[in-house]
Image 1 (tube, rainbow, N blue to C red):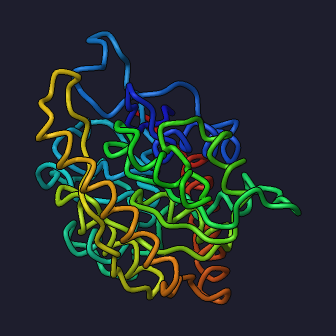
Image 2 (cartoon, rainbow, N blue to C red):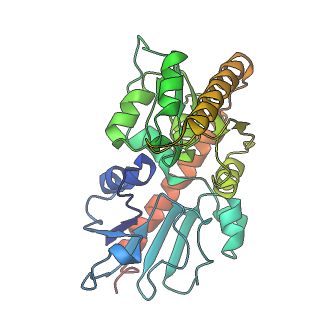
Length: 296
C-alpha cells in the first residue's frame, strides 16, 4: 500500500509529516509513495492501493479505480472528487469535509497530524530562547520581511519550508505561537502550545481552517496583518519606500497584537478524546487491511 501525499518542491513541513508519521504507525502496511500532483507521477507508477493522510488532498486529482483509505484528510482546493466504492473513509479533517463528501458529520474527528503528540512527541526545552514564535504560510515565507520583523521583536521565526525535524525542534523552544500556516496551529495544539491564527494574504484558504477548528470546537478568528512581498532589485525608490512603510506598519501591528492577544488551545478532554477516536479508526483500518479489503 502506498502513502499518498502532496510534495511541495520548496518544502512544506505540514505535508512532509506524512512521511514520518504514517510509516511509524503502519510499518508493515505502507511501502512506497504516490504524490498528489498527477504531473509528477511517472506513467509507469503502479498504484495497488493508497493511504491518504494529512493534507487538503480530496479533489479531482485523487486516482480512481484503486482502493483508498482516507485518514483525517480535508477538502478545500480543486473540484469535488467523485467518491465511489474504492473510497474507504475512516475519518475526515472536519465536519465541512464530511458534509462536502456526503458523509455524516460523525465521520469528522480532526486532522491526522494530531497523532504527532503520541507518535512524534517533542521534548519541550527548559530554557526557551524565545517564548513567542511566528510561523508564516509557506508562500509568505518566500519573502524575508517577517523574519526581520520577528528578530526585531525578539520572536522565534519558524519557517514552514524547513524539515519536520527542524520545525519540531523550534516548536519545542516556544510557549506561544502566532501562525499563518494551519499545520503550525495543528501541531501547536497537538503539543499543547497555545496559538493564534494570523493572516497576511487574502489567498489563505479560510475553509480548511474552519473545517479543522470546528472539529475541535474552536473558533477561527485570525489577526489580520499587512501583506508584504518581495520587490525585484531594480524596483524604483517609490515602491521601496512604500514597502518600508508597510514593514513598519506590520511590525507595529504585530507588536500591538502581542500585548493583547488571547491565545487558543483545545481542551485537554477534547484533545485526548480525538486521539482515542482516531486510535479506534486505526485499529479498524488494520483489521480491514488484514481481511484484504485493500487488495486490488
